[in-house]
Amino acid sequence: MSKEKVMIFDTTLRDGEQAAGSRLGSREKLEIARQLTRLKVDIIEAGFPASSPEDFEAVRLISEELEGPIICGLTRARAEDIEVCTKALAKAKHCRIHTGIGVSDIHIEGKFADDKYGKTMGEKKANIIKMAVEAVKQSAEFTKDVEFYAEDSGRADMKYLYEMLEAVIDAGATVVNIPDTTGYSMPQQWGALISDIRANVPNIAKATISVHCHDDLGLAVANSLAGVKNGARQVEGTINGIGERAGNAAIEEVVMAILTRKDFFDEVETGINTREFYRTSRMVADLLGMPVPANKAIVGHNAFAHSSGIHVDGFLKKRETYEIMRPETIGLAESRVVLTARTGRHGLVHRLEEMGYALSEDEVEKAYQRFLVVADKKKEVFDEDLAAIISDEIHLIEQTYELLHLHVVIDTDTAPKSSVKMRAADKTIQADATGDGPVDAAYEAIRQATGQSPKLENYSIRALTGGKEALGEATVKIRDDSRSYVGRGISTDIIEASAKAYVDAINRMVSMQSKGKATEVEPEI
Image 1: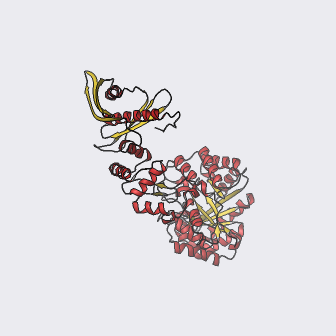
Image 2: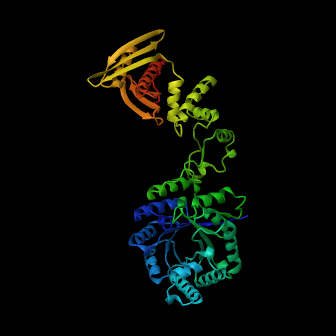
Image 3: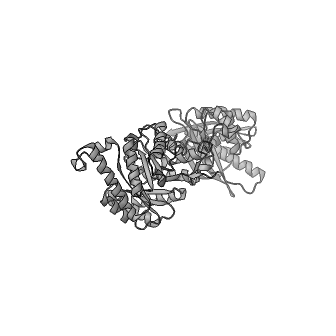
């Protein structure tokens, strides 16, 4: 059975930009429009040309430079708005004018209170229909693709709404936009409204029904999908659901719902290239300065992340246990197992195996216990943390040298002094040294104790956790004549962590030298 296409109308650059505190220049709008073209949205509402010179320029620029999607400009039902819009869209390959007017009694009483629109509600309503028809006819002189929005349809008198829609379709409207302007409607109500429009507007078959839902009650996506289920064949929304007040329907959520629940939306499909969703989401978030919440559906940082032990275990055994979509579908490389104190051994072993570590049961237990210590002190344990734990707790290379004791004395009047006690084979070696700083003094003492003097290429420290008992990680990179070696050490004392890292790097160097290996891929710091 052939499926009907649901057209995707993106209004990120118009309604989305109306979000408080956000503003885009014409060049930024062009960059987003290019990405929306890669996403393969059907219509891009590039702006409201009559609202400002900057918006006019954005619509003009996008119209001139983009091919593929229909480029749309918004107007009120005013001749001067439409005239400006036609100028901005003049060079568009495919263009649409989106004009309209308020239809609910609340809007009519508020916006058209002046007696020039009529002294009674009946007179006002009659004049508003005339204004709508004139606006559509004027728009149709420029383009055959005219969309009419009946603002606040969700709270309108139904008979008046039907009358308005019939009149504008007769005047030349090819799309009728039914907005839930204030996000007031419930999905069951909204679906019924779309169904009733199809049943009660005599010429509705001549136009496409579009739904434009706001998220004031968190129902924009649900209402949009209810509209589709009841016959709407265009959905309007924004990337990440941004927009006025609580925002608009999130396009990525609408599209992925239709795609994922093909069993439910078995009559329709979209033409969206869903693999561009993640990239588009991040571009919009960055340019508008509106970060995507971690728990945001589809494109949030945690949307394909698994943390709790039960979830991780189930996901690793059969990903469909806890995933209804593949991350690749939206442009992500893979799902993430987020390592926290709740992850469990299975999740830890899986990540270690991905990193190339094959541990015995005893080594896994040792690593897991240290992992829990770190995980209890930070929100998430990363791969570099695991590498430090493995390096510090489980010696995967031969330990030629072992740091048994470290003592560092710092005096403001003299150079720092360090004393180390180390084990090499069956011998215990002690060495004392001074240095330019406490770390340098410790390294000089280690060099004397081991008899190894590699060149120090890089040294860095960072906090793994917060608080008074924070774990610190030191990373060093040393070089002998032929190649480099990286060592890591962790401790609540950063000087001790630095000494451990240096000894670890020396052990790696000595181990590789003893094996006579000529080349090695250097691990990243």
